[in-house]
Amino acid sequence: MQKGVNKYIGFNDMYLMVFGIPLLGFVIPYVFFHLSPFDEQIPIGYFVGSCIQTCLYWIVCRYIHIFYRKKWPSISDFKTRLTATGLSILIYSTCFCFSITFFIKKEMIPSIKGLTALDYNIPSLTAALVIGAIYETIYILFQLKHVMVEREILKKENLQSQLETLKNQVNPHFLFNSLNTLASVIPEDPKMAVDFVQNLSAVYRYILEIRSREFITIQEELKCIRAYEFLLKIRFGESLKLEIDINEIDLEKQIVPLSLQMLLENAIKHNVVSKKRPLEISISIIVDRILIVNNLQPKLEQEKSTKTGLENIRKRYQLLSGKSIEVIQGSDTFSVTLPLIEIEAYENIDH
Image (cartoon, rainbow, N blue to C red):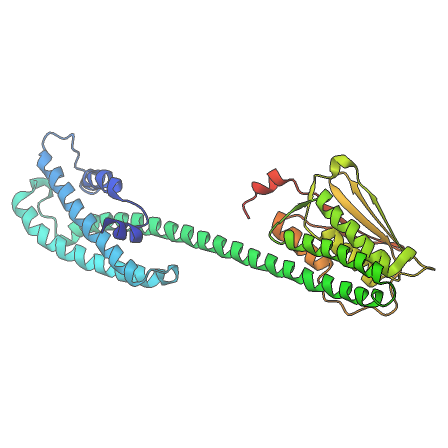
């Protein structure tokens, strides 16, 4: 039962009540009636009675707040909940004060005799306001925290969904081009077709193996690139030149899977590749980024873009690491730089 109540309060308020009730029981008489517990003329019983009265206010106000929170729990219902709570507490406080005034006139201290129920209602309403402000503030903070947690969960689920969508775009894009090439090789050179299928299998196996991985080492990615280069050489021969200049010490650094393969495919898709105008592509590392450069020789008639190239890589880097890729198109070259990922730093990112 207490857990259910605390759900609407936002926290366990036992300690708040233990310390808050006596505090208000002594502070309210001092502020409004200038009655000090250190005044020998004032019996301690008065402050005991004040604490009992504060306790009654606290308990009733607490459950009034809980009642209306159950009825209007949303932050958007704040005005409605606050209005209903305020009116209920006002009615309760007024009735309680009219009742207690008769007792005061007969039993309480002479110095405060003569106070009307209206006079006595002001400090009572102040106490109720303080109690209500405490619970409402804590409840709103609790709700805001809950909303932020939910938004963060939804954000992560949304990012994961986007990531899976981006990964799923890679397979059909790569497979479509490879099968077209294989279809043209089979009738001309069956033995070469077998080698082609073996390398195609190696590339496709790599794609399947890394689908659940967010990052891959450069060394693992280059194994795929070498197999992919064989497939491209079957298709373009010496019209395509690929140069890879990466030191062994950099091979264990991390990048987004299939980013190099997709950039190679992107360069071939948008540029002329012929014996007279060979396409030259280089892959190297500069400081903390991997650089992919090709000579720029755009096709006169561009193929219809499926938008799974640069945009795919850009989004995956942004979703996974918060880092951006750099794309520079010069007069005769086109280059893309990809950030190298430090896994330890990435694991500390709250995304």
